[in-house]
Length: 396
Image 1: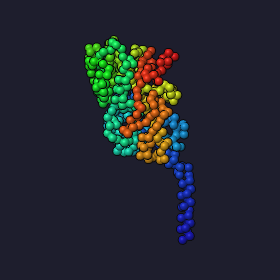
Image 2: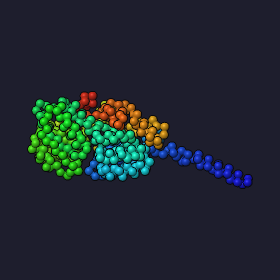
Image 3: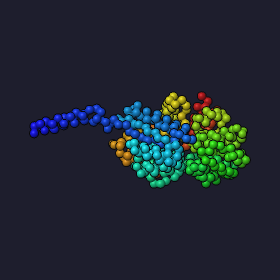
Image 4: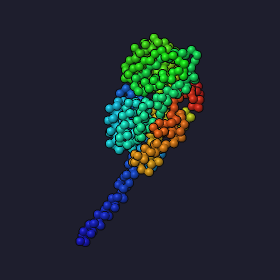
């Protein structure tokens, strides 16, 4: 009997000693908080997807260098969507099984729609980095949030900014765009409200974003001879478009992009230089008045050897939104509490050219907005709204 009592006492002491070891009792507190990232890392959109992930890594490192979230470090888990719906589904499933507390993605709207559905089923909050389709958040889902402007918001920005660049000799317009929900959504919206501009539509040309040539489309566009060309698409296809136009020495009075994947990108001006001076774009941009944004740009250039693409700013901000919400959760592993914290966000200090980040009942950022960028001397300059204009940077 005494032997049994001694054995029980010994086991109890052993259990207590093990529990007090730094690697055991404290293990749960030192586990990383995992955030999933679903973006195209291969395929035609790999450049854009990788840039978003790069910016997210900078955000993760910045937060961890400042002590993490409530004493725990963040960990980014990037998974390749390949820019497809099936790829996004596979990537999201793997992340859900990896213990992520939140999802981010996806650059293209079709993939984002898949992730939003899976986020609803798994009850893991999903913060959109880049995906503009209007119908993305129209399903009554509760776990999806979008920081960036939607297609209708970008389109409305174009209409509101139109008087800024309009000239008396601009009377006709032609659209050329990639034919997914993103491109067609923007073009459809502007056409529905074209009376606000007094422009006459002379042509509407569409193509698949995966195209390897736009030769015939440019031939048709040139034959239409519009005063204004409104262009919508991703980087690779829109770069093809401009390459064709320049090589054929075709001239239009104005070319303007709306959420254009190429026109606001630093790679675009590195490639074409001053040959693309005078092109406008209503698009994403960092806030030139933000010190945090400038630090981000400097860090990206130093770390990756090139200027940060404009769309990548939303990769960075998505992590910051999630981290802000995590700090307000008593249990960071409770995804329901995290979802509620994101929904209640009121973020005043951020890197975007807009007011406070706040979400409505659909999960849309109520103050999301694009800015008007012009290429001047081979550089991107915000020209409107005035509060974010940075003309002086060109003359430096």
